[in-house]
Amino acid sequence: MIFHKKNRERCAVCGKEIQHKYRPMDEWTINGFLCGDCHLDKMKEFYIEGKKPKVENCELCGKNLESRDTYELHKGLNLSSRVCAECFEIKRKEVDKKLENCITCGKKLGFFRYNPRREWNIDGQLCRKCWSSHNMK
Ligand SMILES: [Zn+2]
Ligand SMILES: [Zn+2]
Ligand SMILES: [Zn+2]
Image (cartoon, rainbow, N blue to C red; front, side):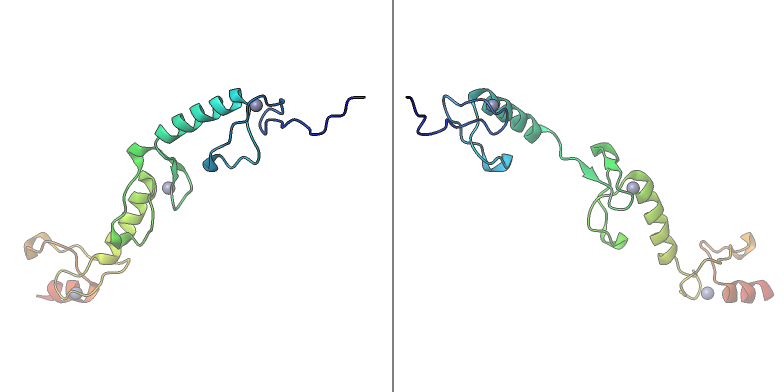
């Protein structure tokens, strides 16, 4: 009678009995050993993956970002990663709005803002108070 004292190792990927064990790389998160074929496949995969640009998601809408439509955010936007073009535009406007101040008194302008009359020769926007005082002149 023949006893198999020890089961042969099987490939952790394809389940084939392994003639020559190949140790997976840590990054592959594979538990066990690989056969030669799978090891080669994994090596290729890993090599190609490593060369691909990292896929990132928009921090705001979760959309996959392609490198051409990602935006590094400047500090003012209060975000930690990248966003897509649309979200960037929305955020930028939001921040711009917040940062805009009345050109005369420096008061922050809210949703309501007033454009100066041309004859006032003012470049910027005004708060209601300043606009009215100019208007009364
Ligand atoms: Zn295999
Ligand atoms: Zn987005
Ligand atoms: Zn003002």
